[in-house]
Structures are given as structure tokens and as C-alpha cells.
Image 1 (cartoon, rainbow, N blue to C red):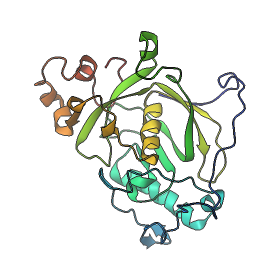
Image 2 (image 1 turned 90 degrees about the vertical axis):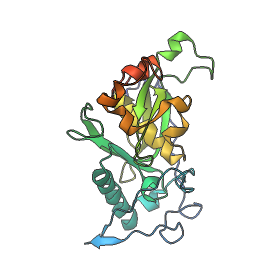
Image 3 (image 1 turned 45 degrees about the horizontal axis):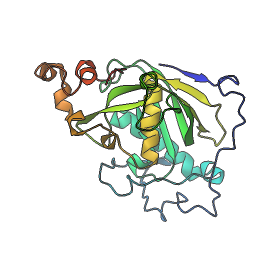
Image 4 (image 1 turned 60 degrees about the horizontal axis):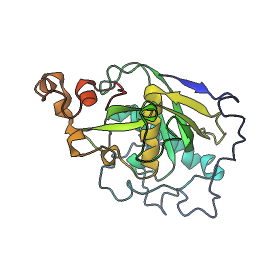
Length: 262
């Protein structure tokens, strides 16, 4: 899995529009703690205490979040929340986390893997990054026709048993583009070079971006057979699955691995 800066040839010399940001005065959701119902407790030395996770069914978790303004990003309050989000990912054992998952109503997420993660033991290291107002400007299945994929188009996506801190104890077999180009702002409000993400990095970024639009992986499975309890994913238990259940690809694929076959 890797991240790389986007070359001009990859973008077909297309001139990108400026990244959208709300102005502080016009934002409907300006990330002020009092106006948004955000109540983050200070722990020590101005550091915010990590709040509880929000779970599937939470009405605010399942809403689209507003863009963040440059003024907000550069505020002391916002910077404290950035550190809080990083700590939340560490404390909860995630390989990525989106701000709404801890009740911070903003278009922000972070991800990365440093060393091993017990929830994804086979995953390799991925550089840690913070993304504000992220957007996908290209994906490997972008030219596919909805519900009418050719065999060639199908190779532009892959499948994975996804999990989520906000849907504990469950895994879902989810299809997504293999590769994306992601753009957005960094933690200081500076525009990032568009990054070409593949493998697990692309998968995590898409999963976290869904959170900012109020979507959870459990909504993306093909049918209920592909949503299973985490306990069913243990190898001893999976040995008891019916052959090729719920599909050939999902039957053969371990947690953390990607499959080209459904």
C-alpha cells in the first residue's frame, strides 16, 4: 500500500479548482462548541479529553458535515480538537477515524498505521496524515456506468471485510475503487498536493470520507449475508462456514486483506 504525490501527467494537466471552505460568517455549522452541542472536557494543560465514540443510529453521526473555514482551522480551539482526534484514534485502536465519530461535527479525518494493529494484523505501515475538507477528484472506476459494469470495469474495484469503531463487533464485505486521488487541506489549513492512494490506504480514506457524508460501511454491503459478527471472522469459526459462503471472494479473504473477487 502506498501514498504518492500526483504528477501532472496523472491529472492530465487538468487545472484544479480551489478547495472549498466555508467562510466563518456563513457557515451553518461553524464548529463552535456551544452552537453545535460539542462539549469537550479539558484534561490537562489545555489538552482535550477524548470523548466517547458515537455509534450507528446516532442522528448527528449520520448527517453530512459542513466544510471548515480557514479561520476555524487556524484557531486555538480547532488545533486542540485535531490533537484530540489523533489521541482518539490511538486510544480506540483505529487505523483511521473521522471527527464525527467522537462528536466533532467537522469535515476532518486522519489515518495511518505505525507498526502492528491487532484489528488488522496483516496490514503494513501507512504514513499518518490529517485531512480537512477532503474530496476525491479521481477514482479507478470513475468511468463505470452505474449498475452496468463491464468485466474490465470490475477490475477497477476490490472488496474487503471492513470494520468500524462506530459499528463495533461487525464486519461487512464492501466494494470500493482500488485507487483514488485525494485532495484537501492539512492540519494548518494549507492545501495538500493531491495524493494518489492505492491498496489499504485508498480503502481507509474512502471509508473515513463516507463518515463525513453520514454514511457507514454497513449501508454498503450487497445484501444482509455480507454483514457478519466479528466473532465469525476468527479462523476457527470460519472453518465452519459453508464453502464459498457468502461468496467465493469473501470466503477466502482474511481480515485486512483485499480481494479482486466478490
